[in-house]
Image (tube, rainbow, N blue to C red):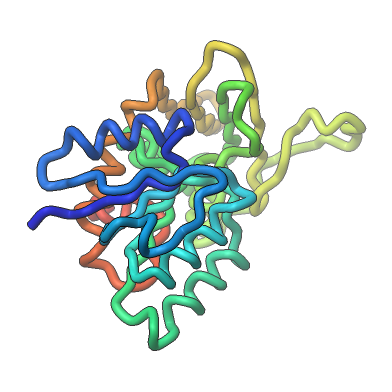
Length: 250
């Protein structure tokens, strides 16, 4: 059966690529393109059953709530989410009027990035030290990236479950914050550089050895297979799903 799709943020760099991917995908039909200033209404959504949101962190949560109210399942690629905003979406989906609705929020849709996050969590309990470096183009508005946040949290959870101590660090003075941010005890560094698209390194170390897990996305097309997969599968997962890995059986 044909899946009718609306794209929110359609005029943006990611949104325009998503529109093209939906138009080219078998079994999907692009029926609505919405962007900044367009109100989310049943009329504007043109009978869509699934919406894809690639907007900006300041508006994405409001968009998701409006789309749930409009009766759509939602696939979200916009970053900037935290536990509080996830909780508000869960509460919304638990209301009787939202019964059967589904939302997938993924920090990254590139299959290489999803696998790199999983590999990092698998490796983390076996190394004394670990740090995350994310590298993106300078037009990205948030730092660290959602992918880096998810990677760090996955690493931290795996290390906690294994009973590991924090990574060793004798730093006593860092007035400029050069050691980066700290997410659940994991240091995360953000690079913004012209010429980059989306990249991440997880560096793990033991005495005498180092493991580097790296993913490089050179074009926005790398995210499209994951987006199309999410649109096709979202209807089978009621409620809130966080992370594309849940659709890959990882």
